[in-house]
Image (tube, rainbow, N blue to C red; front, top):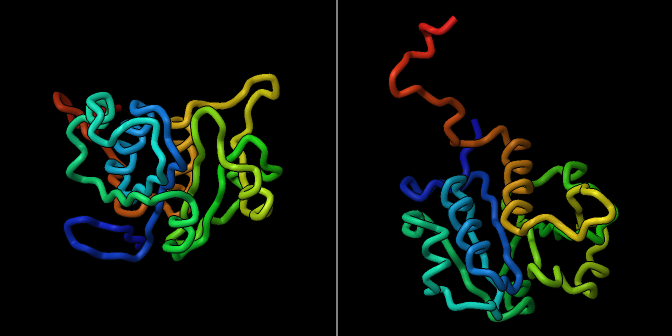
Length: 180
């Protein structure tokens, strides 16, 4: 049985870290924060940001999930890299490898860049083998950041067999066991 960071129990066995490098759009960051809360991932935000963390649009997008979050802020990429302990995977449209070709280890960091510019090419060049892409049509620029984060996070969780996540649902007016 896999277990990830569980806020209430404090257990650390498998831990997913989602990193936003210099996010610019509060709604995207709010949606990503909600995703982190729902899957139990830690959120790491690298400054500068294009908004304040108290932004009303940011809070609205994250709705009532903010108290479930574990967020760490960093003063730039150098600060982030000096403090992390784990394998980083850089999501970029410029990568040669697909995100599904990687086996994501415990305590990995999935790193995403600015909505308008992505991650710095110097960083990508230094980490060629750790750069991955989500396949898409060649004539279009990119997916929305919050959608990309969700795709990547759920691939990691799929590989880990969705640790501690509820894998079933129930109807409110019917009982599944009575269905044909």
